Length: 501
Image 1 (cartoon, one colour):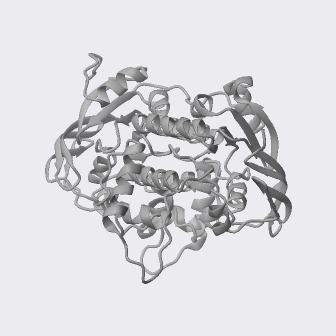
Image 2 (cartoon, one colour):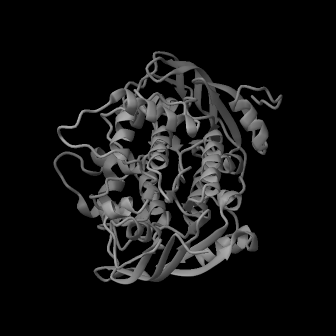
């Protein structure tokens, strides 16, 4: 069978950094070919070569019968290559149908737009992937998972023969994941080749036919998925054994740190939330997209303040009307979109880490740059941030290390409650294991942790208790060790009988 796509000895350097060191890769018709590797292994660079964003220094690309030295983005689209990126690239002030229409049909400045036809096409594509999104909604009003589904609809509508999916389920819940898996299998059935990139190994075993692993810019092997188990796959990726992704809890939870009684915020769709989080405890928050998990986090951090109800921290009732008040009272929040709200990519690591404690670090008019550097060095050491120094820009780091910087910023405030929204979204297995150890270590030191995650195995593996949200409220609180079926049943509104106090 002739490959749809074949790359031979692709090499690419950026200055002295050799991102790709002779990678070969092929994609067959009707195949789901997984591309795995740690952050920094070369996956993103390889994808940019395939889509025409980067021209390789050496090597060739063959797309069908055409052999090329390099591609341009427009030529790649003409050849039937579509890419769904982890970070949606949509126009926020346009509607869903307008975004899809712009991707699917070229128009001139004087062409008349058939809005009804455009809307009907968008509705058809959204229905095809089971997305309950209005084509008339502005993109800026959509959640990250909903934007991801719009990107998938755009790729399907283009009629691509080669579809690249870069962490497509990073912010999707289990229900949306099942819808996506059905789409992928439908594409495979129709002869489309899918390059599937994911750090969630369970997805690779569920979907992929073959897997190619990159490490340090080189391909270390292509294997049939059926010939590998999880341990072998991880070892290929990281070059070492990873003992466990989910370290066990140590010690018993202490006194109640956070207490919520009938907390309501109409603007955020949060209704009558009751919940407690104790010192040294990790409470995982599960639920479907739109259940209100991130919205509750924003209420607790004062971004959208509560209208009514009681928020207490260490027994003290609080009225949190803005993030400054949240920080001063010991609440820290690491948001889900680290590129927009977590790390400022152009700023050095040191400034990223100390941003939330400037009034303490720089009292009055004195700029204590040495103190800032020393603080950054401490966090780089303690959290194992891989960088050439505190002066390195945030954008030079891998996803996992960016997340560690984001966590460091809020640990610098010495919080009593740490809220983590999708803490390992889009990071590789090795970095995920390290972040889990950090979270567990913080809990061991007595920090109260509220962890929001759409990765159900992460919720199950890391939580001492699991709070399930539905319709803007906490409907169930389940014990640690609960199985996936009971969590999903609670998310769908069914009672499991395993609720705890």
